[in-house]
Length: 149
Image 1 (cartoon, helix red, strand yellow):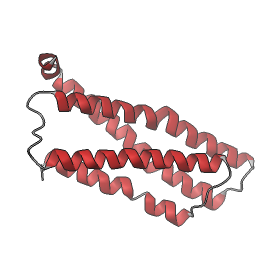
Image 2: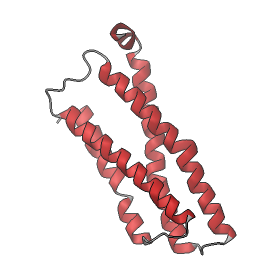
Image 3: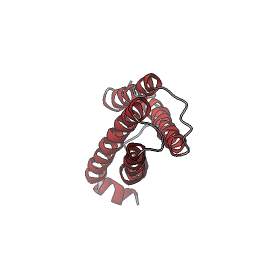
Image 4: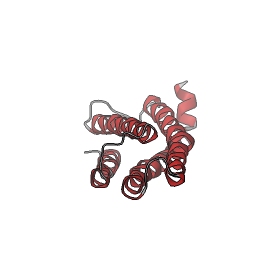
């Protein structure tokens, strides 16, 4: 198995990066949709239904599949011999950040359900602040992998 992973390493890495980019796009866009949904839309209107549809499709058709592919290919990279040295700090900072990114993804899914139930309790300002979470995690992940701090 390790020979196979080594021979397809660059392909796995390339598709992992593509999946991460798609996932990050969704993690940046969904909170922004929540901002507009909160500030500009009345519940129970056709616009509310349109926003709920956009949020559901973004989560289900783009974010969930790209998160799964990111995880599967990321684990394949971890299992590729010579790629990760767990005695260093960087894989741990990356792992914690990826877990936090996954938690944030799930948190967004919960907020989408709040909109569906008509029970959103957060303000546009709070969603704007939460929109910074994936940026901070992205910086930590990229610096962890590239600089290996």
